[in-house]
Image 1: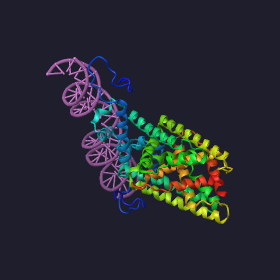
Image 2 (image 1 turned 90 degrees about the horizontal axis):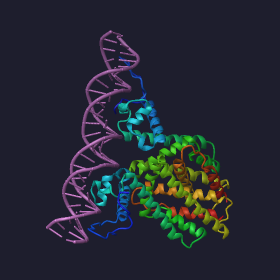
Image 3 (image 1 turned 90 degrees about the vertical axis):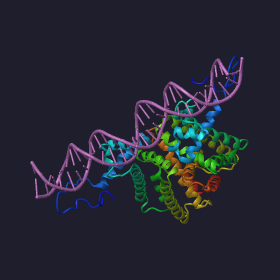
Image 4 (image 1 turned 120 degrees about the vertical axis):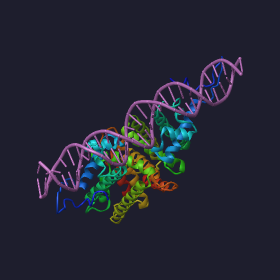
Length: 212
Length: 212
DNA sequence: CTTTATTCTCTACAACTATAGAAAATAAAC
DNA sequence: GTTTATTTTCTATAGTTGTAGAGAATAAAG
């Protein structure tokens, strides 16, 4: 515990109180700078110095907020995940069945510049995860959650008669999940500026397969 | 040109001829060592010193065979690609239609330890490709070739009546390709030792979707 | 102004990197 | 043995990295 409680700020009754920065907010600022660097220069450019510079600080200013680089990266990756999941929750709220499934996929697919950038961030994360069991576990858990979600929507779609294929739902969920991951790679490796990969049509086509 | 022609060795008529190593073969040795290091310790462990050690040499011994690290890595990545494509050619030879398509996919999927290791290598490659247009182009071209192959098999399968779905073949090819890429990620991030991810069943299920 | 706690800059450092190149080891031919 | 061309080791170098920590800058309160 290096910096008191991060959430309750400016609570001090007796004396000089020059505390200005909200540590949580600052952490998010730094994560945002990190995010920008990785998207622009790739993981190799994401040095502590470069991140600090991007955030408008000098070399050592990150230390009080992230004791180590790995802490910063872990936080940054987690933040992207959380944001994606929040967007998913927003978009699928109220929907069910194939409709919800489509909304879910459209939110995960790299369909605009922002989400293509996220794809450019998730690939370095995967590389780290290859040799970092902790990060691999984060990924595994996220994917399991997503698979559960997909299976739930598929079950609803079967009840309503929208999905009629004889293929097992668990297989379908795995297929769809892998398709979504593959789409990240395609988008992340494309030359900057490209935003159309036909992923919507690809998704439509897949959902069509499920209806038969 | 640092080391004469690499292919024609031991051709010398007049005097002392102590040349022993076949440069091409040595390059493959070094690439193999690199491959092992990346699979075991990840990309971060693949330093020139570590690679040399793994190959049984000292620090500077790689220089005559690969003038720079990037040369070595590019060659190593290319070698994995070529080997995969050679295996694909072996396995699909003589087959057509859905049969060939299945064989193709089963060869690309990470179904055994060796191909899971290849998945652990392709992810670092992807990360490099995110900021290295040259490597991205290698990937793009490979994927285009694979997509062509898949489309050819799909066309054959339609002619024979095996594939009857109304969904366009190009969309199907993209779907399948992305599924294959996603499977690489799943396998590469799994804890070492796991070899069964249900990818065969996933593939069977997808081919079943195409038949309807 | 002074006091005081916080925030940030700046310099320093040890570890590690790719790479270069001199020198030693090597092994065939004589 | 000597000669000779190749191969490999070894040491050196310049650059970069994450991290540490002293000190300066900062800003509110008295």
